[in-house]
Length: 58
Image (cartoon, rainbow, N blue to C red; front, side, top):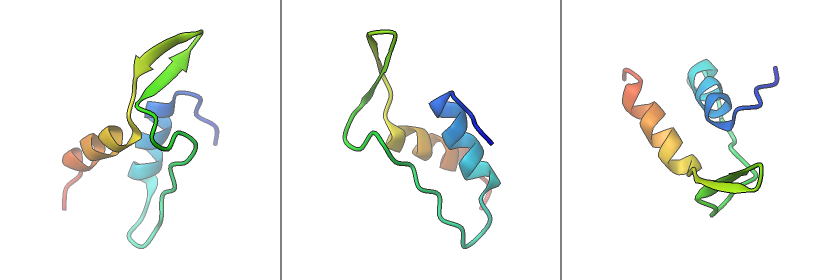
C-alpha cells in the first residue's frame, strides 16, 4: 500500500492499526513544515496524530 499524501498516509496507518500494533511515523522529526514544489507549508506529524486520536472512540 502506497499513499503519497503524508496526512492521508498517517491517518490510514492509525486507523488500520489494531490494539498492540505500533505505528512508526518517521522521516520528519522536529520539522513543522512540509515542502511541496519549493513552498513550505505548516505540517507537524505530532499535531496530525493528535487530531486523529481525537476522532477515535476509546
